[in-house]
Length: 415
Image 1 (cartoon, rainbow, N blue to C red):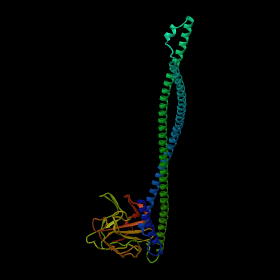
Image 2: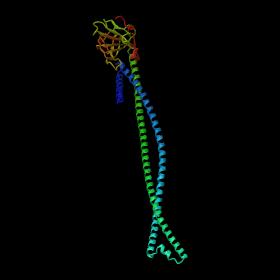
Image 3: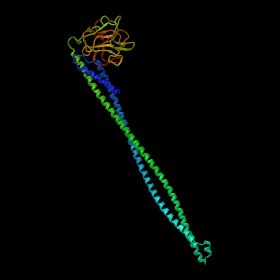
Image 4: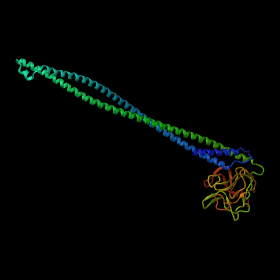
């Protein structure tokens, strides 16, 4: 928002200059304050360019860090994907073992069923034959050989029955253990699948987040670069306009020859006829310690006294300067008259101005009246002489001004 307001103000300043320069060379010359504003804008645009360059450098560094972070994350993703593949292979192996165990259980259950059928048949056969007890068989033996044969038969039958029962018991226990193992394997496989899906989801989320950050940084960089390009464009336009303004001003001043309108040497007229007391001269003041760029003319009854042009020239500034933010701040009602070749006189703190910008004036012509406007503590006229106007100089107080202030006494005659 601040940037848009700045560009609007800049466009307005440039448009104002374009309107000024659309008139003929003999009309209103360029307003000096506008060129000062253009210089200020030019400086501000330079600072803005540096700011954007710094922002772009930072964004590029941040983007590089984000890309490095993404590459690291991609490596982590690859490692976790390998782990996922390994665990998936374990899951597949567990599932295969579960299928194998289920088949073994099925086979054992069939075997148990067959053995159980044989056991039932054995019991049924005993029931049908009404076979005597082992003791009866031994007592009824005809001889030792018959006894041995019967004992062997009994032992074989008993062993077969015991083996059959033991096999049934073993198979049943094995089935129970295999079922437990299958259930455990299924739980382990399910847990592994849950962990893997969670890891996949997390990695997908992280990767998307990094891509979003990189996209946002690229977007920000693009916006900053666009703003920087706009500032560079405005800076170039302002520089060109400033150069044109200075060239136009100098051209206008060069054409102001003849008709007694250009300073050709000699003494200036005293700016306040009848009032010659210099209250404060040109140079360093002691309290406060500061450099005074002109002279202050003040004595009793000076309020309302006429202020006259010190020499022939053209009024380049006639305004009520504010206390801040203006090329002639603190001067109150101020008039600046160009006498050609960059030489100007300045008249400040007047109560009233009687001339307008662009007006040709003659030496001794009334341009205003003494007062105490602006940064003033009493009625007086502040009078300055500046050279090399409108180029900007920094005075000994560190204040930027248009033109270089010199001692007025070198130009003034007797009051």
